[in-house]
Image (tube, rainbow, N blue to C red):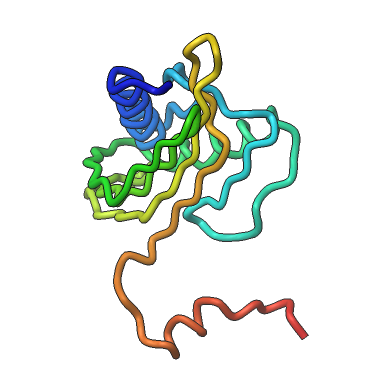
Length: 152
């Protein structure tokens, strides 16, 4: 059974990971581990990477290296708890500075993350989806974003 203390610990871990990502230090100890079969839809687009965990970690670390500094606040839209699973649906309100840039800029993401708490009290991330589609768009703009240049 997941306790409120477990959920607090998970939220601290998620917040720590966001800070590490926005300061170019992704992969430092966050209080959870990415499952070997974790799926990710990252905020930069593209298909879900289908690769071994070490390669996925390297890909995420490279993405993190694009950032020099950042701050995040979280708005919880929904939290689903069932047995040993938690799904967090959040808005991540980031202010970030890309490497080499001088100004912080807003980078707001809609995120959904799924975690499992094992019998030893350790959190495993099973899935993360993040996208910058926070602003409502009419159909034509949405279709323009979704156009696949490789589709027939």
